[in-house]
Amino acid sequence: MTPSPQPPTEPTETVGHIGHPHASPEPSARPSDGHSDGRSDPHSGGDSGGRPSDRSHGHGHGHSHGHGPAAPVSKHLRKVIAAVLIPFAAAVFVGMVVLWPGGAPGHERTGVGFDRQTQQGVVTSLEQVDCKTVNAAQVPTTAAPSTPEGRQAQAEQTGECKKATVEVSSGPDKGRTFVEVVQPGAPRQLEDGQEVVVAYAPDAPRDLQYSVIDVNRKLPMALLAGIFAAAVVLVGRMRGLFALVALVVSFGVLTLFILPAILQGSNPLVVAVVGASAIMLIALYMCHGLTARTSVAVLGTLVSLLLIGLLGSGFIDWAFLSGNTDDNTGLIHGLYPDIDMSGLLLAGVIIGSLGVLDDVTVTQTSAVWELHHADPSMGPRALYRAAIRIGRDHIASVVNTLVLAYAGAALPLLLLFSIANSSMGSVANSELVAEEIVRTLVGSIGLVASVPVTTALAALVVSADRPGSPAGAPAAGPVRGRGRRRKR
Image 1: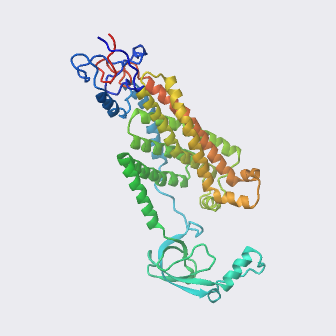
Image 2: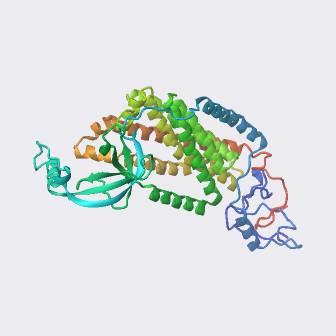
Image 3: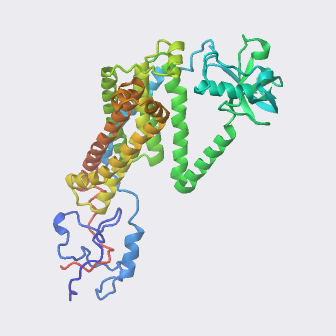
């Protein structure tokens, strides 16, 4: 005797799980009247009289396996993915071997900007003195009291300065002391016992060889990094630990390969592509495992990086962006005139977009896998349509994040243009801002394109495994769902 039909309480309670034969592979076997697909099973919780299994057992079973790992793809598809990724990984490895710089080239220090010899120091004493007594008062002859320069000069003329005694705490002159005068309007004020960074100019007179150029921030920066690492491991556990390891490896590739190779004169675009590809492979597989799902995310990221490289190269050339727009890039060009500065700009665009691309491609691939896991009968079109709706929300938030990140980095520059009452057209046309606009828009286009590309790849891969594969076609057998038995 078959009990009367009852509507299911959950729409997904008959979905098959990995390793459990919960669903029939044929679409025709799916119930249309609200009945479960399960057959009578002596192990499903029902009694010998054929009564349905207890609902509390079915509920607990459904939730105990609902968040398990995604289904593996078939052996054939794993071979196809490996046939694409193994040559790519081999090419990246060969590229790194060929372009490996073996260290940054040496040069004679100019003593300008960051290109100075530096040592550590500590402020041993600090006293207030009249600016006149230390010759710190400098009054411009043409500065009117109504101008900012004139007001600052008058304040220095009548104000009190700080006379700091600084002891060198590292290097060959360790223990040597010198005097540093801090004017009242200086942006960096010193305190007694403060650790500082001092510059050394060997060609200057002895009394002027050392000067304070910055404060030592190593302790607060190290503490902040420790808090970050602890938070990542505490929340992410092993995944978080592997993410930190991948982060260290990524910085190693950046500092040991990408930067020295560019300084050695290698093409910045080629170096950036090879280095970014190595970072992508290491970070994704280390964080998410050596799985087909990760491989699809790698393929989606690779396609998007190629698009960013092509768009960036075309628009940087078309907009005549030199990449030499400030003191730092000017110093680099002066020290290493053979470096292609526009290529360096493009390399920065590629590397800067890589981190956000990883996030987008992994999220979209996981969404497709989980949708397939929830309903193995969905075809590639249905999977794509469902996952792209998630991707649209991701696009909106990620593009906004990227634009605001670049705007925040260029905020002082934008503020200067605002003070000068410059129009938006003239601001955007200036090379400093045009670089940021091209960087932002090219990266955003790559991010937007990565969503449909990765979603389509993932949908094709995971849906291709339905017939006769572990991902979507479990063998016929007993069902442990909490629904009622199927009519014979």
